[in-house]
Length: 188
View: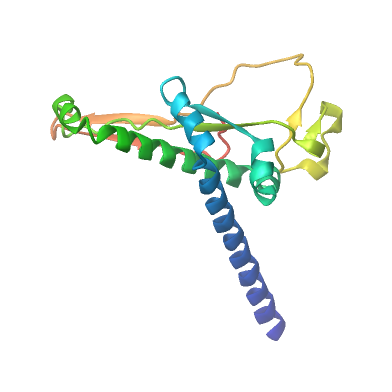
């Protein structure tokens, strides 16, 4: 019975340390996204497209532990950076919208129908070090890690994307809703 209690307390400690690491990495990603040169690149990206390129070399220079976290836990890292990017963009849009609030109120004629929120995504580029492999170099030790694969595409199939956002409107109540569907494996 004592062994089970020790194991459960050790597992709780592991979970707490994992949460602590994620919180540290969230803070580090927010700090990185709030750097002046990164904010300038985000401002330039806003009107053109919804993808922001993050150089893993810049991240490594800023915080080496954060770059290691990106390569070892890519799904969590992408989520952290995308949340930080979307938060930064919303902050910039709110700062720009303070002077134009009267124009925005005049444009929003249908109060009951919500607006579709634009979502921004993150791309990672740069030197992946030992995680830069060829198709023959893909081994079991790289499972669940961020890798960059260099090779020649010999066969390709059509990708059928899943629904990301749906808009619903009810004529009886004259109200609408926008639903966002998240897929943690969706990297598009």
